Length: 90
Image (cartoon, rainbow, N blue to C red; front, side):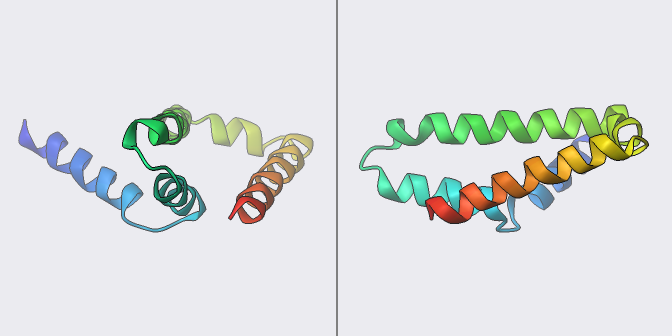
């Protein structure tokens, strides 16, 4: 019973602790706001996006998407645009 809880906590820490582009963006948005409530939309959006990505990874959607080369290219371009937006907004 406790093993899944421990695994869940370790997964959460592994996803939260590394400072990636998304976490730096959330920290930056929070630092620019004078009230915590104003930064909640950014925090909630980041959490929902992370949850969505974890769910589709568990379901194996990446295997389906990566088997089609055109979809792989589209995903890479979307990822590049996202990272460029993050760099531009910092």
